[in-house]
Length: 343
Image (cartoon, rainbow, N blue to C red):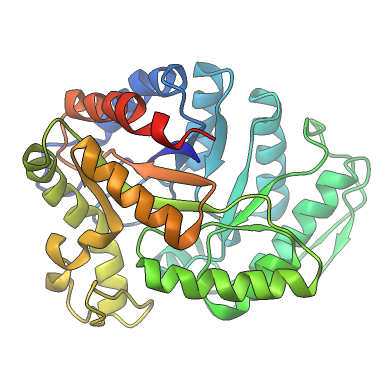
């Protein structure tokens, strides 16, 4: 298995964490992540959230491109529907050049209503618009001398894309969980990227649907990435002391959207979250790699047996977590956990 690290830059109100601190932390740790042997650097995207979160993933990945030479760079997940299609295409092509071909596009239609309201984009049209935008990006990437496109929601004249992408084919991950979009990911020959909010049981169902749809179109997915919250420190007690407030803070966004009826979140026991107060560490703990190295290895063995992932994407940056603890977690995981799962 490969291991990557994802950053969300969360700075909730009342926390000692400020956004400027999260960006300083990112600049400091990204070169270390590469040196320690991690496979990729990922960043999330959300807008207008009370907890903060990063609204500009491609901008931040451009900085990461200048700090690294080897790791993959992944917006995980870019809410592609919130962007003007030509602008996002040009930004992706520029990032592919800046990184010398290390870009993977993680994409999804989005689910948070306020993000669409704030950006002036139709929430009702998001699924169809997303598919049209990805159709356009894929076509333009393959034929950069003529990016002409005619769709229902937008059209583009037959112009030349500049800069020309480095990769001949843009790797695409779909960060989706609904049955129709899982099927569409397979039909598009996109990799299905598993969300951290889902239990192993839920993900088993997602991948069963995905592989069935992939088989129908003769597609063998090359990757199976799974996203998990993680904090590995010298003892499980220490990891939980820092990790419990951090994971609760990160999962609050999922709890709020579930409570509002936008997107379901379930506890480990199978209860639908109808109140954000239900987002408690012990109720969600099966999804977390929070503990000492031995516990992390144990959880990864369970994931390997159940889902056979090719890559685990670890979110270790948590609200309120001191940088030195994050750095310790990165080092411990690389030294004490990763070698047991080397491909």
